[in-house]
Image (cartoon, rainbow, N blue to C red; front, top):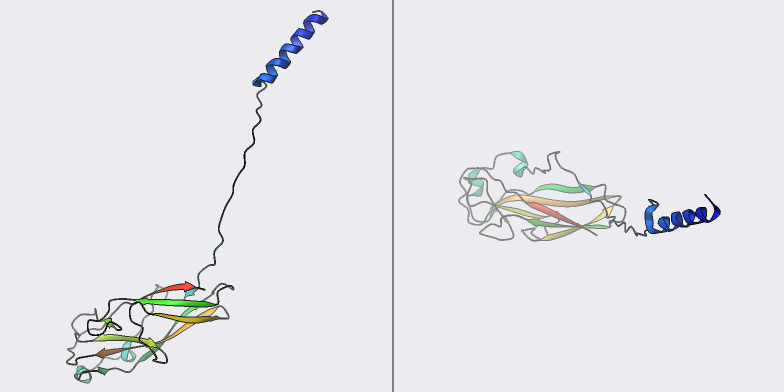
Length: 178
């Protein structure tokens, strides 16, 4: 092959290579990688099953005769709702209480336990400064990664005449971290 033929072959190879026949392509792309970091919630101290059991009257049966008169009640049972391992940035926790309100007083909870009618469940803060009925809120400061809600509950009857039976209600508590 003469010099002219080699030149034509080289030019042809360069031309074909410039048309993308080399097997390589060039492109630019931007990867947008996003995420969110959020504070982990505090851990609620429970019985291991996600519940907190409060035994009214110290776990002893309540005598129906002691609830015969209107506005009768048991002694308050004190208990704490404790949240631990709160994130360092959390300074306060707001609890919102919800459940079935009692017909007699919407700031108390309905007894869904069965036969013991005419009973309401009264939930309040430890200082008894306010009822914590459905929709009510309460704040607790976070101290050393722990927030504690000191509460009290008791059985109450607005009208008296309580019949023997069981007492039970479920109060759900939602939390907002500040």
